[in-house]
Amino acid sequence: MGKASKDKRDIYYRKAKEEGWRARSAFKLLQIDEEFNIFEGVKRVVDLCAAPGSWSQVLSRKLYVPAKLSSASRDGDLPLIVAIDLQPMAPIEGVIQVQGDITNARTAEVVIRHFDGCKADLVVCDGAPDVTGLHDMDEFVQSQLILAALTIVTHVLQVGGKFIAKIFRGKDTSLLYCQLKLFFSQVTFAKPKSSRNSSIDSIEAFVVCENYSPPPGFNERDLYHLLERVGTPSGDDDLDCRSGWLEGPNKVYIPFLACGDLNGYDSDRSYPLPSSSEGGSYKSLDPVQPPIAPPYKTALELKKVSSHGIVDIEKLSLNTEL
Ligand code: SAM
Image 1: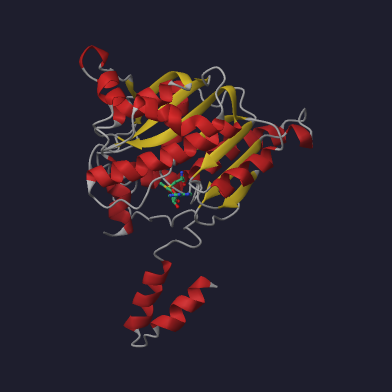
Image 2: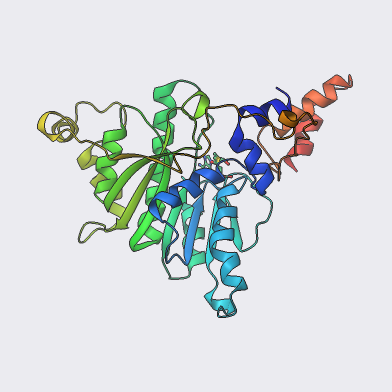
């Protein structure tokens, strides 16, 4: 598919380049904010699974840049934004980057250290595994990322704080809802207008958890025991608690909300390109900031080299690891 035809088919992809966002996902966070006002009063944020960085850009533009420009702000008052990903990303003003795996305890420790005894007001997580197309498997791996994010939340989020995470809707959605309700008084599933109903985004939604209020006497080390009292994702159907909690009269109905201006752009529609409708020629913009070390980099380089007839795979993979 040519760049211009992608611009036509995906209005949010085009708008992201025009407005300087690294990825179209920026609009998802902005539309969640329109509905839930998630940035109100926020001074400290963790952005989990942040690369290539469009959510961090939103955090920077909404929180850091205005505070920096305000004459009332001194250095110590500036918002703290910590972003983590497996992949490195190009710098963003006011964003501290940590490269690491959020399922690894050491990554969580590094994040906690950055907060230096303070707690975050907001944790966001747009993490996604490489999708296999096997829906149950993708949903399971995604739920593991959410549990890793929740582990970090229990260490860094202050009481009353908010947690936003991407989910894949499926048979374990009610279970996830019940697990999150143990920690937050308000849990809503949301589908921003910029998240497509067709193609790869179709099962995607976001959970918006408000008012962090862990159970009395909660100890972070007991997280998994506590979650098991509700059930575990995919497979443990013989757990009494799971069938007891979620079926029959206990069946849960999850609050689900479409968000973003309903008169705004529809992500599943094609829109004419601006100047082509007026007879001129349309010039497609380049992406704002391509990933600096994407996992597919080796494959691209191999393709380039093989098209020149020289393939030295061992040497090439050595070079890209450095
Ligand atoms: N929110 C980002 C933005 O707006 O630019 C997009 C995030 S992208 C959809 C998903 C990210 O999750 C990828 O960059 C991937 O590297 C990251 N990811 C997946 N598993 C992870 C893990 N275990 N630890 C850290 N990052 C992870």
